[in-house]
Amino acid sequence: MLSVRRTKVLDALINEYVSSMMPVSSSRLAECYLPDVSAATIRNELFGLESDGLAYSPHTSSGRIPTNSGFRLFVSRLLLVPRDFSVTSEGGVERQQLWQKQIKAIGFYDFSQSILEPLLALCGQLAFSWCPTAHPVLVVRGLSLLLRHPEFRDAELLAAILTLVESQSDLVGVVEESLGQTDFAVRIGLSGEGPLSSCALIARRVSYQPTITFGLIGPTRMDYRQAMRALGSVT
Image (cartoon, one colour):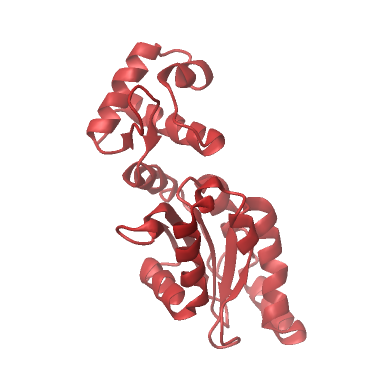
C-alpha cells in the first residue's frame, strides 16, 4: 500500500500527464500540485513510484510518466466512489419507461446517437453502444476523434484499434470480459502487450429493458474521472 504522500504524488503525476501529454518533472509537481512539498522530496517519491512499477522515465534525466499499473491504481480509488445506477434508484422506473418509449418511437440507432453525441462532446473519445436484442451490431461514433490524440498518430496503434472496431465480435468480447458480472468497468490496456496495451476502455451496462451497454475507448492517458462521470450520467 502506498503512503499518503506517495499517493498524492501519483495522483498529481497522472493529472499533469493527462493534461500536458509530456513527462512530468518534480519541480512541475511542486509548483502546480504540491506546494507544501519540496521538489527534492517529490523526486524521491517519484523514484519510489518507479521502483513500485507505477511510473517510468522514458529518457535519461526526463520527467516521469505513469505506467498502466499506475493508472489502474488511480482508477481503483475512483471506482470506490459509490454510484447508484440501478432502476430502483430515485426516478429509475420513470427513466426506464421513457427509455423504452424512445427506442420504440425512433429506433435503436437514432436513440444511441442521442446518447453517444453528448459523450463525444464531453470526453473526446470513441463512444459505442450495444444492444443485441434491439440492434444486431454495435453503434460506434467518434473514430475521427481518436486522431486528435497524439498516441494514435502511431500507424500500428491506429490500425489495431480500427481492426478491433471493425471486427465487432472481438470488441464485444473485450467489453463482456471487462464487465463480467458487474455493471461498470474500467480496463486499462486492452491487451497484455502490443499496441492495444496503450488503449483503455470504460464500459457501463444499463439493465433496463432492453439491456444496453455503453462505452468509451481512448488512450490510457485519459481523463478517467471525467469519462466515468460522463458515462455514469447517460440516463
